[in-house]
Image (cartoon, rainbow, N blue to C red; front, top):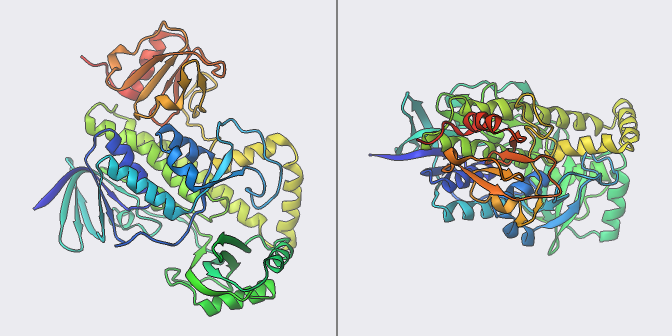
Length: 478
């Protein structure tokens, strides 16, 4: 017997869970297959950048995240550890929300389940095939599932990517870093003094308190292991601390240990027929700047409404292909900026001289802002062609006469925000909300927002608006 769904999502991390929630918001039948039997306790990522915070606000989830995190100003050390004042950013959320990845996973899983997603743990994908009508997935226990579409959100070693034969070119790791959570006996003042001295040159080192006597420790490894799935031995961790910092701080009682490299790779294609790749399955890069989790969540936010439109039958012909067209260049830019940051963090004289030069240039606010916009993804603008200056960019939350803009985006539908009161989207009322309201912060008479908050059209001309509605939301209803 074969289970039948609209979409199968392989991978139950932040990308897969965000995608499942977006699909269920539109009533799509979705199942999430996660190979691990239990949620991981390993804290790979430490927070949400401004664009991801906006995404959560757009869907009414931010009030769940804020009490469990801590807000940090954007600026101090976020690009290659170069400390500069926080620039002025075009967002209502100019901060990093410090929140461990396991908490993000839990909150997104709760959201997906509330909306009706089927999450199956201990489900290992071993085979898949597709035809013109759908995709069949086979699990290690013999279970077969059938769906119209399948999305691989199963990490850098993606089984989905390998099964559909998509190449993953790039550069292998040149350096490796050890990461873990543990207790230590050293005096906190001593820890702070040693860390300040070491980090003058070695930015891949850090010891930070997590509370309750636990510390997060990061230290450069001696070489590059061929198999980084094998965690480091605790003795190796202590040896590296002594080599780099001159002390092991009396570390003991490790909670977990891990290692990661600085490889940069990107899938040649994000789509093969009815199968898509998202998150780390589509791209891996060094963790500098903390962009990985955020990039994956934003992949899901871009893809979710498009897949739902295809399932519902109103997707324009090009819509599913626009996922790769829009997100592939964004990830390529992240690979570039993380690669550059790794170079700037090297201890040799050449990279250090370039670092000093860039630090000087970052005293120019526009340079500082541009680099921070890369880290936070606030600078992402999709190429929708010629038009208004807002076209293709995401729109920040705006204060309206009657509430906030993001309060109008909770349904995940399109939105025509009309300050003129003269426009109409009546033929798309089943897909697009038309709201007549005004904002002193909006620089266009009216804007058409896609469900992901990016501006699909701006202006006053009804004929141009109709063209944009057809382009992004399909033909008028009969």
